[in-house]
Amino acid sequence: MILILTDERHDGHAAWVVTKLRDRGADPVVFDYGLFPSQAQISLSYAAKGGVRFVMRTGRETIELNNSKAVWLRRPTAPVAHEEIKDDMIRRAVQTDCRSFLQDLCDSLHCLWVPAPPAVVSRTQLKVSQLKLAGELGFEVPPTLITNCPEDFLEFYRQHNGNIVSKLAGLSSLQIVDNSFCRYTEVVSKRDAGYAHSVRYCPIIFQAYVPKRFELRITVVGQQVFAAEIHSQHTNHTRHDWRRYDLDETPYFSHELPPDVAQRCIQLVQELGLCYGAIDMVLTPDDRYVFLEINPSGQYLWIEQLTGLPITDALCDLLMAGAQDGTRRSVSSASPSGGLL
Image 1 (cartoon, rainbow, N blue to C red):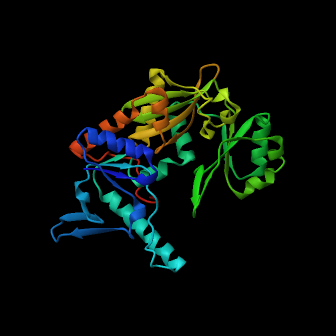
Image 2: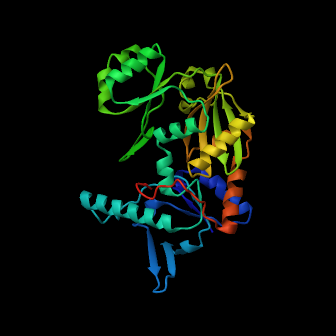
Image 3: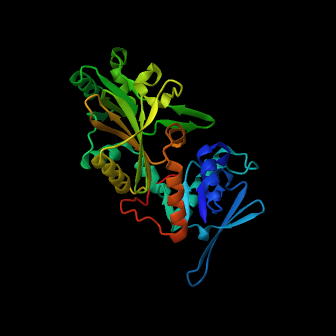
């Protein structure tokens, strides 16, 4: 069985992959953490001699989770306490307990995880570890300072003649209650430098600005690498961060990576304990490939639609292969603690 963990109401990627998998004769099951525990029940039973059974019930459907051979961890929402629980403190306690339970359950499913089990995905989103590993593997990375020290920030600003950008040290997108926030990469202005004292409130990533011929979104699926050019410099809207999106004015093309860069991308994904990853890089005007970051759950469908790169087919191949042999990916660098769903 292929299990897809996501909120299918708002996930076009999952809907497209489900269609493709069904065309291939598979019958994937889609489940969202947000249905638990108010609309779904899960029971784990352990026999005296070690037999284990995991059962999930949603409405009239009963799903034997033990039969999961491949799991695609997409974008599930957080567990939601039953509406009959009115007290806010109790609701938070229930939802926290549900998250811990689901984390434990997921870690007990011995199957192929795409991109990786939840604890590994959470760890690989951290920028410090990404940059360190990328440098060790031979990627060029921008000169970088991560700090909450105003003096160190100003010295870095002077070293690079003020030609630097800033990013959040943690996740660039946040969900707080019913509000979503996204912080893009921003050029640090002279006015920003005048407020250097505010850096002490929270660590921030500062990097030397990398000149761009164009940007690259490199999607690694198993052993396959799909690179796309994003000509973000064609419009001011996306000049400093293509995630602002200006699809009508920004050309997209497939890109042939040098073999050594492609192999390094596969190695980075593997070293992080993943079998899928979306890597952001810059190709400079003098043809240098500069690594920026990797997203273990990065979107890809819009690139496939604009370039024709067969990323969905590769993803389906990976899930189908996992469903056939049910082998859990060995993740030697996985940390069993601290993972969040």
